[in-house]
Length: 361
Image 1 (cartoon, helix red, strand yellow):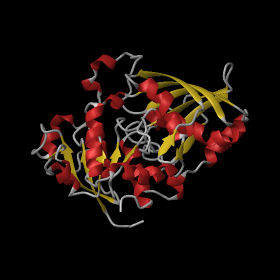
Image 2 (cartoon, one colour):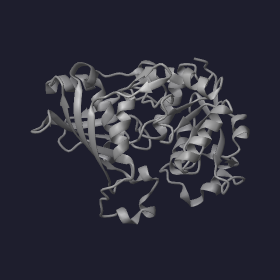
Image 3 (cartoon, one colour):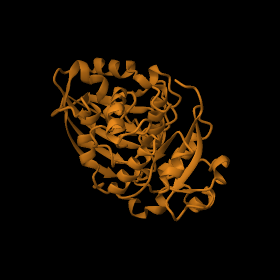
Image 4 (cartoon, helix red, strand yellow):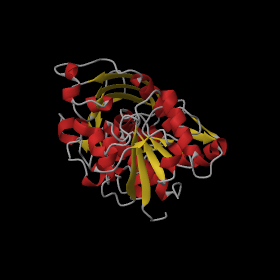
């Protein structure tokens, strides 16, 4: 890898995910935040003034970004000329996001996207670095389609998948996950909200999150798919059915998971597989990678978002309550930090993987 410092832009820098990117890039060993961009409403203001009272992070706004002037996200060529790549965290209609990301890629600026707009695009890799790092090898085919030399789009997956898909992954090869039922209990930061901006969630559970169940059932099949020619072909199994609830939790998505196997493992084999699992992010020693990706808790009442979401700086997946089930083979609980492992942190980790493999040079 070229050990230079990469100049980075955040497009959609004033929103909650953009704010999280800002905090994660402070003092990052490889990436230097050079450009913050947002809608025309914020353009021309300092970052501090543009965000104003909407700063939603628990840590203070980094001094290094306060006086940076927010650029207009629509000025693609201008942004592309100042950075080595961008993180895209805009909140816009999907067709507009798709057009913006493609325009950036065609301006020879690689895009690491936090959005869902391009997740279904067959030659856009959707990557969890511990699970399907090899999917970045589709990038030359995508560059050919776009007519670019450097520019491309890579995306991270939906944030709720990050809690349970990593728990399935080490069990797939030896035991074959055949079907799963997943109920997710998702934090309000996943909707870009804080408690003062979402009063309706207090003392409440909302049993619907638009589009989330479809993503939970379909996106894992792309993660477990394979490259065939110039496209990623989805896996056919496991069959997943999902229900997604919004719950009064600030950060941390929890999942109740029920799973059946083609060849049922013992409880000890499952625990062993989780304990020993290491992915490419760990092998490459990427700066944001957790040392131990999967953490199993023996206590009956864990994992809990409040206690466990910051495990390994919020980049680990926490698992507990593994036991046999009456309808499926096993059931267990999972939890991960949705704006760290699931959103901006997962985006930074993906960018580190792309840098380590030379795609950002």
